[in-house]
Length: 298
Ligand SMILES: C[S@@+](CC[C@H](N)C(=O)[O-])C[C@H]1O[C@@H](n2cnc3c(N)ncnc32)[C@H](O)[C@@H]1O
Image 1 (tube, rainbow, N blue to C red):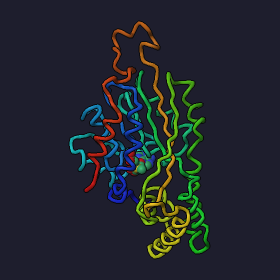
Image 2 (cartoon, rainbow, N blue to C red):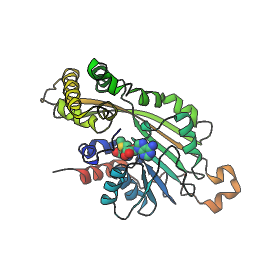
Image 3 (cartoon, helix red, strand yellow):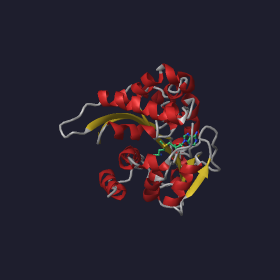
Image 4 (tube, helix red, strand yellow):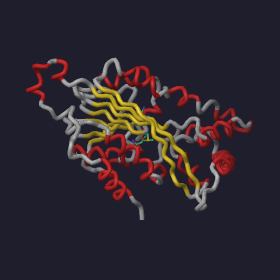
């Protein structure tokens, strides 16, 4: 697969950042010693963490040079690390591991998710959001167009990798509940207002469509995209205002490790109460609206 395209990814940044805001709102930490944004992409999700916890407390991690360069331009004073999430080992146990729209690309969640949780410091939080849209018309059409004879050899079984990665919501609960003090799993379906079928194609071209289109030679890429857009035209009818609604379900989970004082009650005095207590002064809706303002494009 070719490298990620930060410019294309940013085209729908406000819509893509909304689940990141909602995931962060559910993180029950007042402050952190340090935390990581896994799959930090052009820095939009890292920026949220930096605003909440402060620069110097958060590092963005990605294995794409294009994404890391773009993230560094956006947050020149923040820390960024080039690493593969599958094998990454932090130097010291973090208080927060946050992964918005990244783990769907990293295989073997039955190993990965408990491993990431195990890296946390006592009281630490693993917060994850992934698209849950493989059964949506946008993804079914990728497969349907890929089965057409002229490019099946090049595309192969492109969608299989991601379909094999993601587990059912209850599976994440089962992986985390035996080791976590608290687990919360939820699903939200967004209905994004899109100008037309071409806009839906642009949205998925920067993410889910990559494994289907990237293996094709350039002339076939254009042909595939035009066949795909014809399917999208049929699957997402025009609404009352002439635009189309892209239904986009996303799966979220948050797991909190027992704090030191829960494991050793005598340690409560030394650990303080910051890590496991929800912030009372934190208003996610106010923050979301500030972030939307910040990301609004003229
Ligand atoms: C959809 S984008 C990131 C989303 C971003 N966090 C946001 O909130 O919009 C997924 C990112 O994960 C990164 N990524 C995918 N697999 C990875 C891996 N194994 N290790 C590190 N980064 C990975 C990609 O390079 C890409 O930047």
